[in-house]
Length: 393
Image 1 (cartoon, rainbow, N blue to C red):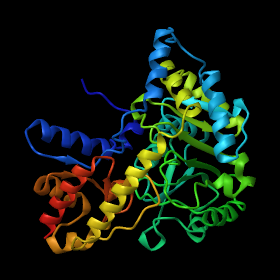
Image 2 (cartoon, one colour):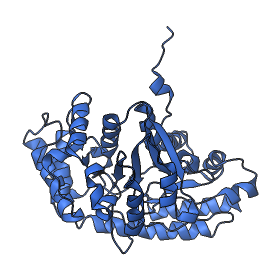
Image 3 (cartoon, one colour):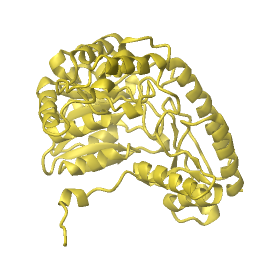
Image 4 (cartoon, one colour):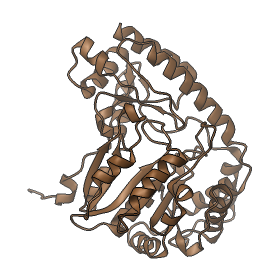
């Protein structure tokens, strides 16, 4: 039988980060010694008090459907988190809990985008933003933010990209894949541009908020430009900061009309997020927060080592990041030295010749780079850097 697939499916590609992780696992299963630096997942266990809350929830039989937009306890915890950590006030009707921040982002795009709408996305970007836009019949408009600007889009670039068709601007700070975070002043400059485009909604993806070592602390565009709150959706979750990727809990806050539309979409797709995971997320947000700092210290130590090691390699240039657990080194000079045509081939070269799995930068919208995840042990990182150094020499 000749099956015809929907055009929306044919517009997108599988996640390249998942593809790299899967390929590394296949090679390991075949007996190869592979160090995987592709996955964006903390290598720490979920803190004990969070796991215990889930166990207790199971024992109490809290295994049924919850409200579509989340349990009252978790929504109140999210509300308090925004108030206490971000100085942002939201009514409970302005909050939604989803099966991961990724789910919240897709619900948002499905709620606000129509055929032909433009979504402005600074590159390097998280790989899913453009494909999600396409799934919602919108047109991704990519602004390249290179190393000269520390991978952050400028006000002038944003102004040049916005049109009458622009419906949504996507911001991610601290950034996957670069680790760069916008300053309050940089966000204020973007906000000044957005004032002239009242139809444009803003999504700020704050999932790496807690994994930040810049001394001036975290700031998103609503903190920098309170006047934009009424057209901004803030997306966050527990996956990264609390080492809870598999629990699949994200949340969003924003205008009531938008959140209500996201709830309607979620009610017809997944309904509620996992009830046990919601209990665990409530414990994460309301419980002892000291579990975060040791993980952040470890990520910064790894960051410092990886950046130093990469910059000692011929043809590699790595900028220091402000947070996350990624580094996005420029490797085009190394590619040229070795006669390698592009960053996809360079990633294949590292996988085959060094036994190190990384993700090519073109998957994030900026060729000539690779993304390295240092969400793994220092032992693995030391071995990986030695292998890469060896094959580049």
